[in-house]
Length: 445
Ligand code: NDP
Ligand code: 2IT
Image (cartoon, rainbow, N blue to C red):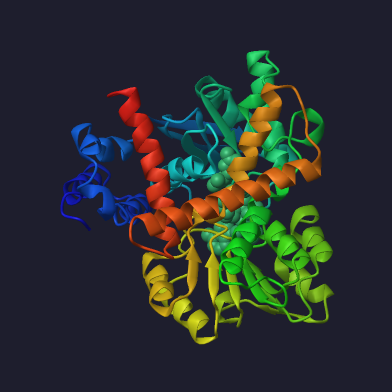
């Protein structure tokens, strides 16, 4: 790290003890800032780095709810409103038992720079709860969402903070959250949440956008090397929202997706993942991938081990943070992988990223590669603000051109700062300078 930046990083460690994911996300950005450490005295004068690492507001609240047997449960709710220099706080909600303040802060911090890269007028935030939706009935999910919103509603709004989905929060949960917000406030404020259903203010392509966008980004990376996805072997981790639509678009562009996973293992399917069956198992029946393997003769389920053992040309980690470690990266490199694009947030550890860099594997960080989800959320906000709704094809074209622009911005920024080919440097520097310039302009707030 550039010595001028170290005191800010030490302060982050000292002020946020016991938050390893947050430290990791901050370190990754700071390691990219060396090229501007000496050349931007305005950033130094206005303490931009220290201010950018401190959330504008952090909300933690109790979420009590009653299960179907009448037993009362208490969960913890979070919303970290990290930075509003570019627009209202914007970012998803995650419901998963692992959720804690460190995880929400890392996600919110990443979101600030990701949202800047999209070119849309959105700040960064994230929220969620340590609630575990697995095995819960629809009625339990609804009561949890209603209780969560009964506190959250006072902190959000079309011009203030606009949540959306993330792990464990999809269309069903956004529906229950929106209904409760509408009931409490007596306002049909469509722009307060994104990821809504198509008949009540949602946008075409939002459901597909993160996975599609990740594949569009990977396709741009390949095109920069005069290659394409046609005929490539692809491995996608996860089998949720991002993974499903990454698989769909990779297949549509001519790749064969040979494996995907969930938290209980992975399936290998040399005939290519059967998307209709996968969606039925995961989205409709909400079952494990073992059910996919049971019903598909060409598929094998592996309960132990790593999906990254499956040989591929292109790896798209689309499950969760730190799911791809250095040892996995070494196996991928040994098996000939040439490109990794993060559909999830921070799925590759810093050590894994170093392995890819040293081996010459093209690597795209999540804040660039998965920005299509939040970018399409911003398109949803745009449609809500104008009380309009756009066609699927038009919206997908907008997403494709946003991903192309982010790719160009990463490539040009990396080259400008003397790190050609580094999507990590390009994404961090382009995102950071955009937010920092707005903060300088807006004064010490
Ligand atoms: P979903 O809840 O739809 O799917 C998550 C998938 O990852 C599931 O297959 C789940 O397995 C698996 N998974 C989750 N946690 C773990 C874990 N601790 N260990 C192993 N597997 C795990 O979430 P999304 O697809 O929406 O999100 C996936 C990633 O993409 C996250 O990192 C999220 O932050 C990121 N992202 C999401 C965006 C969106 O618009 N939804 C936008 C940008 C990034 P199981 O089914 O067994 O739980
Ligand atoms: O990590 C992410 O970018 C998301 N979960 C989507 C956020 C959003 O507001 O659409």
